Length: 210
Image (tube, rainbow, N blue to C red):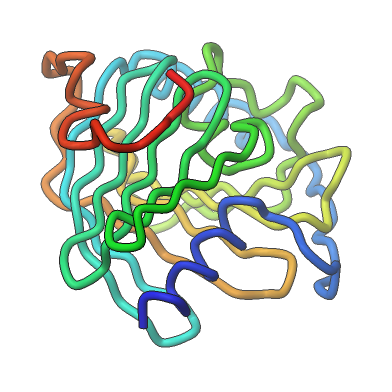
């Protein structure tokens, strides 16, 4: 299972590979959508730290749980619970995929991963770097779907919020092959202090380029 999950996580992290899916088209941005996007941007900009458990479900049939830690705009860490020996760490430049059992590390540029969106210094849905391909607002829930404007075939990211009060609940990534991963935050805690050493804790044997 580890090898299958590892390959899946890497494919999602890279949002790359052979382009087999059709690119979604950008939608028309109405005044209503503009107002909601502005509220979501303001909300995301004000998140400084995030700590949560998570449930990850993929369309390949695999399910994982673990711990998620974020301190914008510098650090992110995802610890998968046993039996999955995977840790993902990102800083402002690189994402490191760590197999703690095999003691192997792979590095990719942060900008080539969905994590770049979570760690960006300033959120914007309308700065030209991203295209909004879907928008839903119903039952106190907002769903915003995005692709990279320059590479729409690379994959899609959907953010899911409750609206009142606005809280980020999950994101769903669809990679270039159409594989979907649903990443749900459980009991999220926002803006509690997180020490910087928490992101490298228990990983002294790995060269993380820090």
